[in-house]
Length: 166
Length: 212
Picture 1: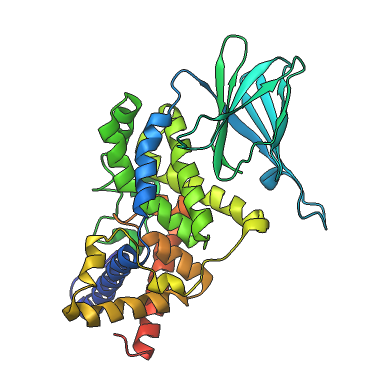
Picture 2: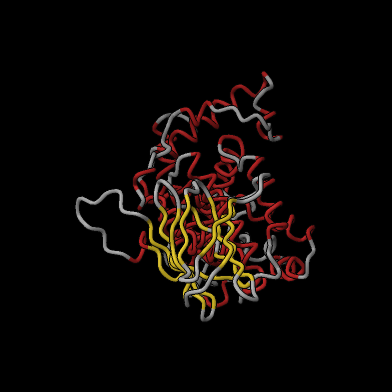
């Protein structure tokens, strides 16, 4: 099937090979069918993904995740419940966030006041709101189960962090 | 997305075209339309690439709850990044890679790790019946249904590497090798041989159990 173009004697071997490839394809197809039956994408998830289009915040600047303790920090032996430390960056603006069981706390840098909405997906209720003081510090008992993002209004602009699963 | 930059192996010469050529051809155009605000294009992207994202999450054996959250996170983030994706035609690989990284994070934060090799999966009845599921309801299809279950069971008992690879390959439409590579962090060139080995291993198991 690759370098063999002299179809004289190895025709049989090629047929065997092609049969095997064909069978592989059939079995893979059968598995695909089985997955569609036994482990399909849940319909409500598909719907949420469709609706995610409405979540786009066209006026906001995206703050990308630049540090995640889950990935970038060396775990300390014996410490199993260390808080999740995250850093987001949008240009000059940095947002440090610490997520614990109880809520979030963090700081906007350079230090400045901000209104911060804690977005939690497509929830019907209004998002919880926190206020960063003049030092840029904020804290609140906001549960962050599941996907979340922070939407910050500082002086003249709106910044939204990348969605993340807490 | 296509095999242009991929070192050719015997397996890349397969006559059938994986997602790369046919089903994914429009992905770049759909992404562009979605960037321009076309909600229908976005919906088409969700329909076409949801099974890939779900397969990647499932390949990592996340629990139902974790799988749901990762899936949502991936799509929310994709919506955020829409206009910044450098190679729109590779959106599938972007999604697969994001799903992989988020899945690995879940596994790392072991506090919430609950592996999903629960046998209930086999008996689970979704409230939303897909056409394929409805087929299982008919009496005549009992034998077919039994075969599907046994096939799935043998698949679940494969080694971890094969189970992961096959779970991703099962996405519908079939993922391109570039997407599989992004989904599992393995080289494109190794996918063909690994796929062949895993499928044959599975067939041997089915043979031994008299399922084939």
